[in-house]
Image (tube, rainbow, N blue to C red; front, side, top):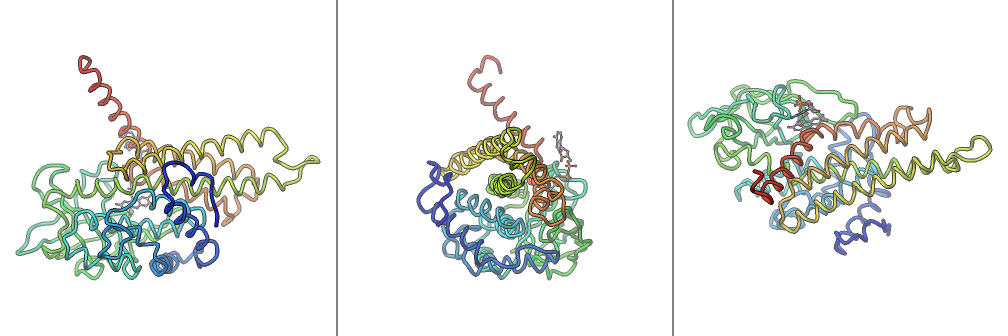
Amino acid sequence: MTTDPHLDWPFFEPHHKVLAAHLDRWASTEMTAAHGKDVDKICSGLVRQLGEKGWLKYAVGGTQYGASAEVIDTRSICLIRETLARHSGLADFAFAMQGLGSGAITLFGTPQQKAKYLPQVVQGSAIAAFALSEADAGSDVAAMQCEARRKGDGYLLNGEKTWISNGGIADFYVVFARTGEAEGSRGITAFIVDSTAPGFAIGERIEVIAPHPLARLTFKNCRIADEQRLGQPGGGFKVAMATLDVFRTSVAAAALGFARRALQEALRRATSRKMFGQVLSDFQLTQAKLAGMATDIDAAALLTYRAAWLRDRGQPVTVEAAMAKMTATETAQRVIDAAVQIAGALGVVSEQTVERLYREIRPLRIYEGATEVQQLIVARGIIQAFRESEPSRA
Ligand SMILES: Cc1cc2nc3c(=O)[nH]c(=O)nc-3n(C[C@H](O)[C@H](O)[C@H](O)COP(=O)(O)OP(=O)(O)OC[C@H]3O[C@@H](n4cnc5c(N)ncnc54)[C@H](O)[C@@H]3O)c2cc1C
């Protein structure tokens, strides 16, 4: 069994160590078709494999629906994402989207909604997606225009969503739309929309630097039954934020996985590449680079697993998760860039591991709250804490 030294950190319990080691072994020996150009086929296949082998049990909550525990264990999803990301960005993506796409159902679904969707998510027989962003409402989510109007005993959904991961292959989408109870963030409601719903269509497929299924969705008088509403009318913003809150720390963990793989590749290359009568790693300039990469990865990992551990203890982690997400994603970008530099020309050859990582890491600094948004969250949190500790200055 692989025993990464960081699994001995006090954040983890013995079962976390077993989970990470088993998954690492499975991903090394049994996971198949995790890379390639036909991303729809690869991602659908990966969801099936992850479901069949039981890894998706960790992506949802509720043992009666097949989950590993009543409540999603943040350290488990972080370890799974870190491990999968070391092996394959698409495998990490497939796992993460099953969790993010069904997270609102785990957190806010009725027993009927949970019974209908969660077992299929766990088995990998239904693919989930989370549709929040619009062309003019990304970081500023509350500016969304997609609307759902009351019609009879249901709703009519009209508008568009874009940058939706799993768009085109998902079986259902958790969609957020304006329902008008109030202005801004308090007038939004969440719905579960099946891909077969009349009036729902894929407007366009979107190609990105690290390809995965991604699309713009259109809704034209798309009828949604009342039973498909998730949470309270007007409570959609809360549903979206609570869902993102569960998974934000796991984005940091995925970045760690990419960074650790890049360091491994850099060490492999630096210790074998002969030049000027020695190998690359004999040069102190290279050693400084490797030392910086290793240290930055551990610093980001400590922030990541601190946030995960605190969350599993039931503590609020808004600031800690933001620190982890921005640090791990920015660190991983720098580490991977250094690995490309160490590889030389080989590092920019299409589909070489470090070239793939170089493309795969980039969106993580943008989605689920760009780095600047995380900076604002941290600043707001520490300023508020300071004012509370010194009320005279408030
Ligand atoms: C690969 C990928 C997959 C995605 N998958 C999904 C998905 O499944 N579901 C979904 O709903 N969305 C998804 N998104 C969308 C993603 O959440 C948005 O791209 C993100 O919220 C940023 O919105 P935006 O792209 O409109 O950028 P904008 O909101 O226009 O922001 C542009 C830039 O402005 C800066 N910025 C933002 N706020 C501030 C500020 N307050 N102060 C200073 N600078 C700021 C940041 O650098 C940011 O990158 C995905 C995006 C990508 C790239």
